[in-house]
Every structure is written in structure tokens, then in C-alpha cells.
Image (cartoon, rainbow, N blue to C red):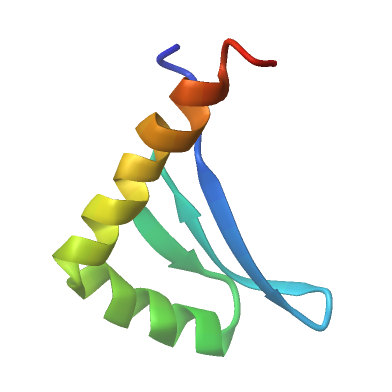
Length: 66
């Protein structure tokens, strides 16, 4: 169960521009806009905590289902 990873990707026009990775515990930007958003969103500790909680709430909760 330690290697389960929650990833939340944000795409526009089929291009991923930002992603939250639970293993890193932060947002990572892949475009100029994504990098700017990642910097802003990573400063919001409540947003990071909520995204990290999704790993337990969504991934670990559903592991028995699949």
C-alpha cells in the first residue's frame, strides 16, 4: 500500500499543464502557465493538505474494490 500514488492532472486542449503528485506532495507545472500556477498553489498549505488527503480518501479506500 505504500506505493499507491494519487495523481490529479489538469489539461487544456489535450495538453497537461499542471499535476499534483502525492509522492512529491506538491503541484508540478509543465507549461509556463502550469509553472506559475504550481508556485501559487504550492504556497497554499490547506490546498496541499487536502490533495494529500485524497490519497487516503480515494485511493486507499477503493483498493479493495478493484
